Image (cartoon, rainbow, N blue to C red):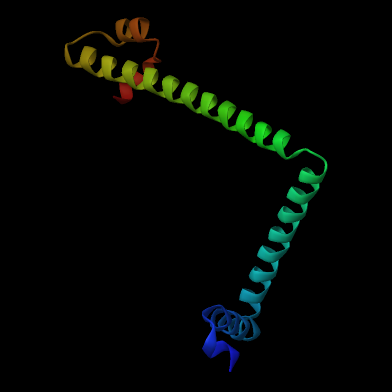
Amino acid sequence: MLAEKKPIFKKVVAVVKKLSADEEARMEYDKHEMWRMDYAATMRNAARKGMARGLAEGLEKGMEKGMEKGMEKGRAEGKTEGKIETARIMKSKGFSVADIADITGLTKEEIKKL
């Protein structure tokens, strides 16, 4: 039998057996295959039209923008954490809630929760 001679055929036979028995698995496999074929067709079209480089550049720019936004968000979160830590220290030293709010920019409610 062919499946016994080549490992790839063993895998194919296993997939076919699984898909024929499990309708949900078959539907998931079909969805994945449709996505794979759409992606391959998109890449072929892009290459034919000389757009592959443009797609790669677009992806790279998108990644850079995403990284910049992530870094900005991280810095903002770090500033907030710094303010909270400062407020905790000030609160433990006996500063008034009003003074802590004025210095850190946190709300009185945020400070009371600390």
